[in-house]
Length: 148
Image (cartoon, rainbow, N blue to C red):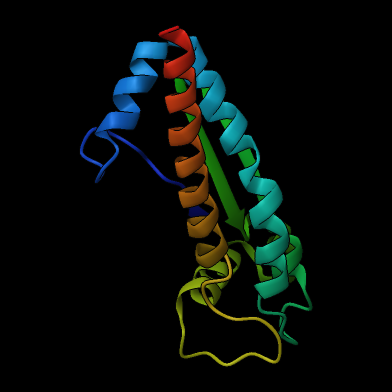
């Protein structure tokens, strides 16, 4: 299965300010993260499905296997987008299903009738970066309001 996620910590370039504000705001910081990251799957999944390779071998099952989830555990919020796995097993077998999804996502030398490699990474990275910028703006506004 191909899975993408982003981890943000103090070492992430330019995000020390964001993390500091999140810690300062506590539950409000988590709420902001959850709201922004909850929007990511609705942006990424349709774009990933539109760009997913559809070849004679899989008949569109790889595209149809693309999904996402948002998880909140304590103060940690994460979003994951994935393709492959159990949805492809009936068509390709257990081991081959995971390898197939990874190869289709990462091998830019394979030519397809429809779709392209990077079908998950491209929209996910763009949406995640936009979400982080949104978090930054929302945190700045929350801190400004708290100071009044």
